[in-house]
Image 1 (spheres, rainbow, N blue to C red):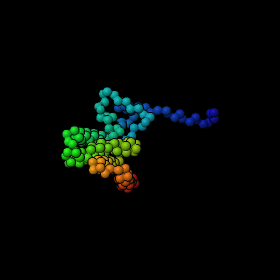
Image 2 (cartoon, rainbow, N blue to C red):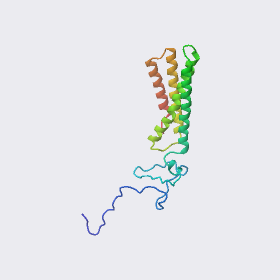
Image 3 (tube, rainbow, N blue to C red):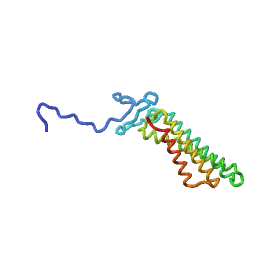
Image 4 (cartoon, helix red, strand yellow):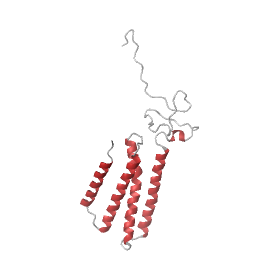
Length: 185
Protein backbone atom coordinates (compact mmCIF):
# COMPACT_ATOMS: atom_id res chain seq x y z
CA UNK A 1 0.00 0.00 0.00
CA UNK A 2 1.35 3.41 -0.98
CA UNK A 3 0.47 6.37 1.14
CA UNK A 4 0.40 9.83 -0.28
CA UNK A 5 3.32 11.99 0.66
CA UNK A 6 5.71 9.11 1.36
CA UNK A 7 8.20 7.41 -0.87
CA UNK A 8 8.28 3.63 -1.05
CA UNK A 9 11.32 2.07 0.61
CA UNK A 10 14.26 1.55 -1.72
CA UNK A 11 14.68 -1.91 -3.20
CA UNK A 12 17.39 -4.04 -1.61
CA UNK A 13 19.95 -5.16 -4.17
CA UNK A 14 20.19 -8.95 -4.40
CA UNK A 15 23.77 -9.21 -5.59
CA UNK A 16 26.75 -6.94 -5.82
CA UNK A 17 28.52 -6.39 -9.10
CA UNK A 18 31.61 -8.53 -9.78
CA UNK A 19 35.13 -7.22 -9.29
CA UNK A 20 37.25 -6.35 -12.26
CA UNK A 21 40.07 -3.88 -12.91
CA UNK A 22 38.22 -2.34 -15.84
CA UNK A 23 35.32 -1.18 -13.70
CA UNK A 24 36.40 2.29 -12.56
CA UNK A 25 33.48 2.75 -10.20
CA UNK A 26 34.57 -0.19 -8.04
CA UNK A 27 37.64 -0.07 -5.80
CA UNK A 28 40.38 -2.53 -6.64
CA UNK A 29 40.78 -5.52 -4.36
CA UNK A 30 43.61 -4.98 -1.89
CA UNK A 31 46.86 -6.79 -2.48
CA UNK A 32 48.47 -8.94 0.18
CA UNK A 33 50.70 -6.16 1.52
CA UNK A 34 47.99 -3.49 1.74
CA UNK A 35 45.41 -5.24 3.91
CA UNK A 36 46.10 -8.58 5.58
CA UNK A 37 42.56 -9.18 6.79
CA UNK A 38 40.74 -8.92 3.46
CA UNK A 39 38.07 -11.56 3.06
CA UNK A 40 36.16 -11.93 -0.18
CA UNK A 41 32.44 -11.52 0.16
CA UNK A 42 30.67 -14.86 -0.50
CA UNK A 43 27.98 -13.09 -2.55
CA UNK A 44 30.44 -11.32 -4.84
CA UNK A 45 31.80 -13.28 -7.76
CA UNK A 46 35.40 -12.55 -8.64
CA UNK A 47 36.12 -12.81 -12.31
CA UNK A 48 39.67 -13.18 -13.56
CA UNK A 49 40.35 -11.79 -16.98
CA UNK A 50 43.07 -13.50 -18.96
CA UNK A 51 44.85 -10.14 -19.33
CA UNK A 52 45.26 -9.69 -15.57
CA UNK A 53 48.48 -10.95 -14.00
CA UNK A 54 48.13 -14.06 -11.87
CA UNK A 55 49.07 -12.27 -8.66
CA UNK A 56 46.18 -9.83 -9.04
CA UNK A 57 43.85 -12.35 -7.40
CA UNK A 58 46.40 -14.88 -6.15
CA UNK A 59 46.89 -13.45 -2.68
CA UNK A 60 43.44 -12.06 -1.98
CA UNK A 61 42.61 -14.77 0.53
CA UNK A 62 45.98 -16.08 1.76
CA UNK A 63 49.33 -14.34 1.75
CA UNK A 64 52.08 -15.77 -0.40
CA UNK A 65 54.38 -16.35 2.57
CA UNK A 66 51.73 -18.47 4.31
CA UNK A 67 51.18 -20.49 1.15
CA UNK A 68 54.93 -21.00 0.69
CA UNK A 69 55.30 -22.00 4.33
CA UNK A 70 52.57 -24.61 3.87
CA UNK A 71 54.27 -25.95 0.75
CA UNK A 72 57.61 -25.97 2.59
CA UNK A 73 56.22 -28.03 5.45
CA UNK A 74 54.60 -30.47 3.02
CA UNK A 75 57.89 -30.75 1.09
CA UNK A 76 59.83 -31.41 4.29
CA UNK A 77 57.23 -34.01 5.25
CA UNK A 78 57.64 -35.66 1.85
CA UNK A 79 61.40 -35.89 2.36
CA UNK A 80 60.84 -37.33 5.85
CA UNK A 81 58.43 -39.93 4.42
CA UNK A 82 61.03 -40.90 1.83
CA UNK A 83 63.58 -41.38 4.64
CA UNK A 84 61.03 -43.49 6.55
CA UNK A 85 60.57 -45.69 3.48
CA UNK A 86 64.34 -46.08 3.08
CA UNK A 87 64.84 -47.06 6.74
CA UNK A 88 61.86 -49.43 6.79
CA UNK A 89 62.90 -51.22 3.60
CA UNK A 90 66.64 -51.49 4.25
CA UNK A 91 66.89 -52.15 8.00
CA UNK A 92 65.47 -54.87 10.22
CA UNK A 93 64.80 -53.72 13.81
CA UNK A 94 65.19 -57.29 15.10
CA UNK A 95 68.77 -57.46 13.83
CA UNK A 96 69.83 -53.82 14.17
CA UNK A 97 68.42 -52.45 17.44
CA UNK A 98 69.24 -48.85 16.53
CA UNK A 99 67.13 -49.04 13.38
CA UNK A 100 63.94 -49.28 15.43
CA UNK A 101 64.69 -46.07 17.28
CA UNK A 102 65.77 -44.26 14.11
CA UNK A 103 62.58 -45.45 12.43
CA UNK A 104 60.49 -44.28 15.39
CA UNK A 105 62.07 -40.82 15.28
CA UNK A 106 61.63 -40.57 11.50
CA UNK A 107 58.01 -41.71 11.63
CA UNK A 108 57.28 -39.19 14.39
CA UNK A 109 59.05 -36.45 12.43
CA UNK A 110 57.20 -37.29 9.22
CA UNK A 111 53.78 -37.33 10.84
CA UNK A 112 54.55 -34.16 12.82
CA UNK A 113 55.68 -32.28 9.70
CA UNK A 114 52.60 -33.47 7.84
CA UNK A 115 50.23 -32.22 10.53
CA UNK A 116 51.72 -28.72 11.00
CA UNK A 117 50.15 -27.19 7.84
CA UNK A 118 46.93 -29.09 8.51
CA UNK A 119 46.68 -27.54 11.98
CA UNK A 120 47.42 -24.08 10.55
CA UNK A 121 44.86 -24.45 7.76
CA UNK A 122 42.20 -25.61 10.24
CA UNK A 123 42.76 -22.52 12.41
CA UNK A 124 42.92 -20.30 9.30
CA UNK A 125 39.53 -21.64 8.23
CA UNK A 126 38.07 -21.31 11.72
CA UNK A 127 39.17 -17.66 11.84
CA UNK A 128 37.33 -17.06 8.55
CA UNK A 129 40.47 -16.85 6.42
CA UNK A 130 42.34 -14.41 8.64
CA UNK A 131 45.86 -15.29 9.75
CA UNK A 132 46.55 -13.98 13.23
CA UNK A 133 49.92 -13.55 14.87
CA UNK A 134 50.90 -16.72 16.69
CA UNK A 135 48.94 -19.14 14.51
CA UNK A 136 52.09 -20.62 13.00
CA UNK A 137 53.71 -21.00 16.41
CA UNK A 138 50.62 -22.81 17.69
CA UNK A 139 50.54 -25.08 14.63
CA UNK A 140 54.23 -25.95 14.98
CA UNK A 141 53.75 -26.69 18.68
CA UNK A 142 50.81 -28.99 17.96
CA UNK A 143 52.78 -30.74 15.22
CA UNK A 144 55.64 -31.23 17.69
CA UNK A 145 53.20 -32.78 20.18
CA UNK A 146 52.00 -35.17 17.49
CA UNK A 147 55.58 -36.06 16.55
CA UNK A 148 56.56 -36.78 20.16
CA UNK A 149 53.43 -38.85 20.87
CA UNK A 150 53.86 -40.94 17.70
CA UNK A 151 57.56 -41.51 18.39
CA UNK A 152 56.80 -42.58 21.98
CA UNK A 153 54.06 -44.95 20.79
CA UNK A 154 56.39 -46.56 18.24
CA UNK A 155 59.18 -46.96 20.83
CA UNK A 156 56.72 -48.46 23.32
CA UNK A 157 55.60 -50.87 20.62
CA UNK A 158 59.21 -51.82 19.88
CA UNK A 159 59.86 -52.53 23.55
CA UNK A 160 56.64 -54.51 23.90
CA UNK A 161 55.33 -52.13 26.55
CA UNK A 162 52.52 -50.50 24.56
CA UNK A 163 49.19 -50.82 26.35
CA UNK A 164 45.96 -48.84 25.87
CA UNK A 165 45.89 -47.37 29.42
CA UNK A 166 49.41 -46.02 28.96
CA UNK A 167 48.47 -44.59 25.55
CA UNK A 168 45.35 -42.93 26.95
CA UNK A 169 47.37 -41.45 29.82
CA UNK A 170 49.92 -39.98 27.40
CA UNK A 171 47.13 -38.56 25.21
CA UNK A 172 45.42 -37.04 28.26
CA UNK A 173 48.68 -35.39 29.37
CA UNK A 174 49.28 -33.93 25.94
CA UNK A 175 45.68 -32.73 25.63
CA UNK A 176 45.80 -30.95 28.99
CA UNK A 177 49.19 -29.40 28.22
CA UNK A 178 48.09 -28.15 24.80
CA UNK A 179 44.78 -26.83 26.15
CA UNK A 180 46.71 -24.90 28.79
CA UNK A 181 49.22 -23.48 26.33
CA UNK A 182 46.80 -22.52 23.57
CA UNK A 183 44.15 -20.56 25.43
CA UNK A 184 43.07 -17.74 23.12
CA UNK A 185 42.85 -14.42 24.89
